[in-house]
Length: 389
Image (cartoon, rainbow, N blue to C red; front, top):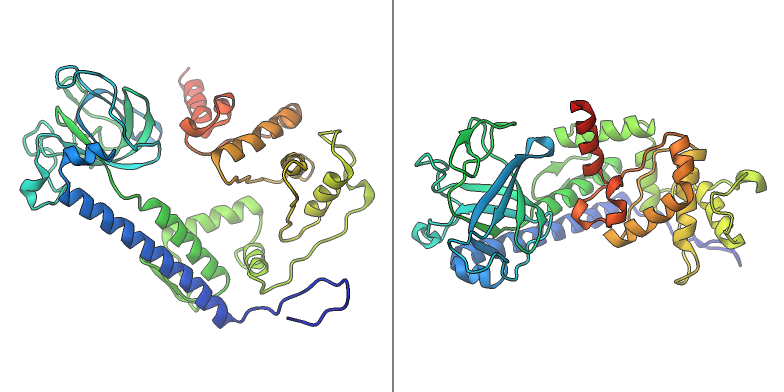
């Protein structure tokens, strides 16, 4: 720790590259270990347990039928599943753990997993021409007491059934072939781990460190990036007007203590007007402090002191006064919705007048109904309707 005088800010010594390397690799190892445990548990559970046992534990739904198939955003097939009255005494699903965003597998209900050496999902798609033995990956799109919609993908060139036995071609390679009776099984979600590892590799590149994850290795001396990382870096650069060597790297170095964060003191008239005239002096001071930050700023305080209200005002000034693109994140869907409601309440007219859009990312089913029109899904559907009108 560097020596400081009374009342001065304590400034820790910057970490060495070796220490940062160990710290980053430790996180990558922990993510890889967690991924392996979840995948092993899912594989063991699905291979050793009978479908009925999986259903009793909320990990499967048996004897489902296709109610309808439609094409959603991105050409994904939206398969609506239900419990047919011919095989069930009630249409309601038994208790289950399926939620929007979960990774699932659609299987042929007539195929016994135990007859394949305990391995599920190895049937050859379309062997009999009617979807027998089909195994398709998908993502839960929406759920209710009697319906569950899955966004499924199919191999290119495959033909589909429309739920009534007829075949037709669909977008993006066609809708999937499906059996008459379907078993829906929940599987391990690797997307979360992919995103975490991708984020760690971005940090490693920005700090010029080497790191090894379960999917790739990053060499500190190499500037080559995989396609996904390169595309994202280009998108970040285009959005911020920064180059790969300045803003992102400088921010990350400040966040890990390798570079001292900087602020500028704003004049008293830095906020010529307030979108919320009811802000108190401490809230205004916090907003000015954040606006003057070149790297990051922290607004903290006890519950009920107006932190969310201050952040809503800060977002409006960044978007409208400074004309910046702002990404707002929350610890939960409810936290994000709460902040969005306050931004709209105070700045809806100003945003509309300046023609500044606001989009709520995330699954529509997990967003408050009052904010449904701000979701990306609703806005994209509106664009499609206008183009087809």
